[in-house]
Length: 301
Image (tube, rainbow, N blue to C red):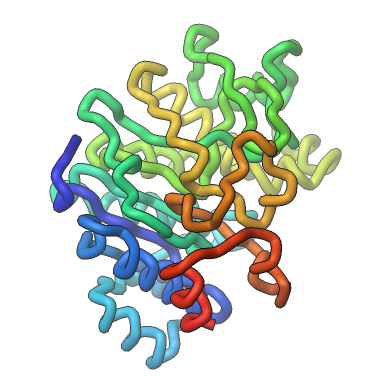
């Protein structure tokens, strides 16, 4: 394993609702990440858009977060999650030579206990979680559909790079389809930069338009499909590490999670994503929360 100083965290923050999420995420790292609590944290925001409030900026800086503006192609904003891919690339570029490992995660995430499982072994190039639901995924027992054939072709993925993967919530065996909500990467590999470049090249190709027209999900999750193609083409299976299911756990899907893997308490989680869960005033009644997490969450409200 690497030393505590070899890992850094990065995420995207935009003006508005995401500001509170960024503060919650950062505070959770500083409070619960154990030996990694003082790890570098970078918050990236698009320079050519409305900036963060003075209050948010000050609070993030007080939490020792480096606020980094970056220029983005305006066209990326016109396609679902174009900003996400571009930001991930900027974060990876910034981490080269500074961190052995970059934890790129969605802003609506919380670190709940020391994330030692994110510090992947030296022979692994990327840590990942599978997608939660099948949706546009390619079922392993069925022939590859036209959409995924195009993804594989455009990303130069060969048949021998395909292996079975099980979705975390609905438990379906699929061809690889990586969750873009949290990734552990080695910045020098350039996977996130390849993702952004390829996504920009492919998103408006006419060959994909019929899929967007047939089902909006193809457009919404196109970024994740391209990410999958890039990872498969760049990294052999032996270099990939499936992170434990308690990492990037979908708190908003807790009731639907397989009963034999569902944690007894929220404290058992390593990191989680909450999506819209906190918008429900009674969300805390869906899962047991023990101290010190219980009081900490109450203080953040």
